[in-house]
Image (tube, rainbow, N blue to C red):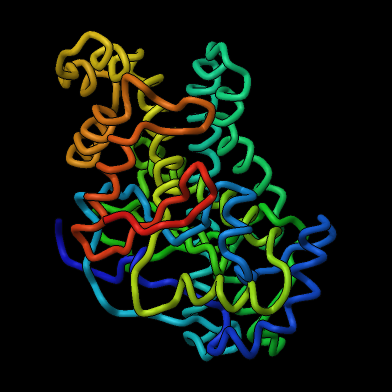
Length: 355
């Protein structure tokens, strides 16, 4: 796996050193965000976590990049980020900002090419609701191109200079992008919902199909997180939401992660001509030689793990946004191996911990 570094999924990040105290003043902004007037950089609270997540069906839990359960890290370090904390020297900060600008340009251009390749395949999907689900991360990246503060490195420096610990963003679905050399070698991207930061590896390869699939996966978490924040009502909800992300226990909601993986698998299936679903329907192994001929990647292990996940996802696939029990149990088992407390929302609306 290469040298271990801080894993994003194990290190929920807040923009405030004391979220419960400093972020209460964001309540009014959160309410405005829910009305579509403004969105805050901060996550809001989870007052009745059950109510919020039931409403959206998802959790916005911090989930990593690519990401496959086999490469989840068991690191224990944590990090709290404040917009007002001291940072690198000015020349160093400017260098990082320029590096981030270059990375954003590379990724956005590559994403446009990836979209041109995948969207015609998506258009062939018969079910419109299902088609829209697969399409949503592509629309989200297009939306964020209009975000004037998408260079998170620059934005956070500017806010720090102004003495701001929080800041407004005009669209709840906008997110920041930062180059993060601390990502593990098997990570291409990772999204932190509390700070709305998409971390990208400086070595992100725009020509690597799996890197693009990892980014697709993380973009689904962006949308999930934005919807969660817009559901927050009151300081109690905010406190509980933050506690869920930053408490001593690593927690995840399987409904949310299953959704991200499911549609990532669907895109992979489209790219390989339906081989994943076809193999499951025919009761045979996936033709890996075919996959390697159609999917360009250096992340062979990640690709193989996605195939393993696909073998549990198909032949049932996604049915009206729901997934088979064996797919959910497989993902829960993989995360539990790395010390996660795995929760699931049942059809009854009850939140229970999976054993």
